[in-house]
Length: 156
Length: 156
DNA sequence: AGGGGAGGGTTCGACTTTCCAACTTAACGG
DNA sequence: CCGTTAAGTTGGAAAGTCGAACCCTCCCCT
Image 1 (cartoon, rainbow over the protein chains, first blue to last red):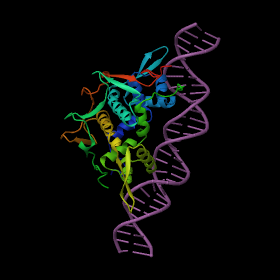
Image 2: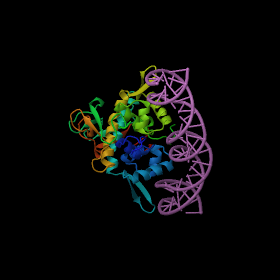
Image 3: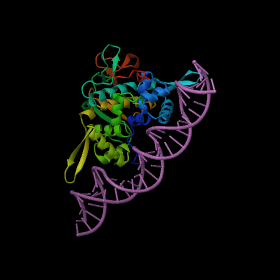
Image 4: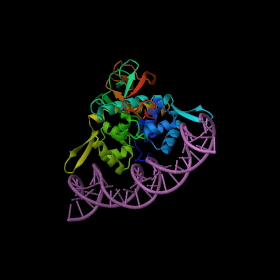
């Protein structure tokens, strides 16, 4: 029997287990910006070098980044996002927009993203089926995992 | 003068400083599902009680959750998302979709979200101005912070 | 009046991570 | 030969996490 202390099975939790450690998403940010070299990452993120090395290994193992040699002799490497990594960029954009809206007064955004359409990117999360923006009150959760309800473990 | 070791100013980093600690986004998940009571959170997230208490304090202080009394005598509390908290839900949905796509084979999603339109929610991050889905190659970053370029600190 | 929950935490010590500075290795440039 | 750049690794102190046990208040049952 599943022990009653197991947490809710959830892709959010699984995703965070990979990219939820400190600095991981900032690594992805820099790499998406094109700054894939170790010393650049150290400078732009402000992370300790050893931690950064650990995170990079993990992200490469997870298939989110790839490590590319951009110079043999002297050996030099560069990290780049894989397809899976690139698909996390919308998460970053959405998070950035939230920060811009809630963590800052006025319009002192430290970074502006320009969309190819010529406008500043304001990311909106929409429903693929109907195209409408996603609002909390329009959502209903349906747990699929056996033994779980929205409220908690069914056995409880 | 700004020390050259300051990291890139960025709303992603600022947002993660608030909600990027372990369990914080899972707390938000549960609270958005309507499970705002301490023991529910412990069970559904699987976090140590002391850590959870710390996270809850932080999220309330940050204005992401509010603590509501749902019973005086005996005193009982419940955490609920504020408006700012609800606006993080799209981030969770996007992250969940990424996890469903990349961390699982087949269609064994542990949770399905139903949109009010009657379809299963597949979140798509779009540009508010033109409505098109956001792709990496359509984006250009423009740092606004003085002393910073896309590549790194300007002084470097 | 006593006993047993439930709910919402706090406390403790062991364990694990993080942090920072210094060091390493390899190759290049003058 | 000397200094520099890049990409890490190493070591020890400081901070954070974990799990179990404990606490407190009130309710309900008998």
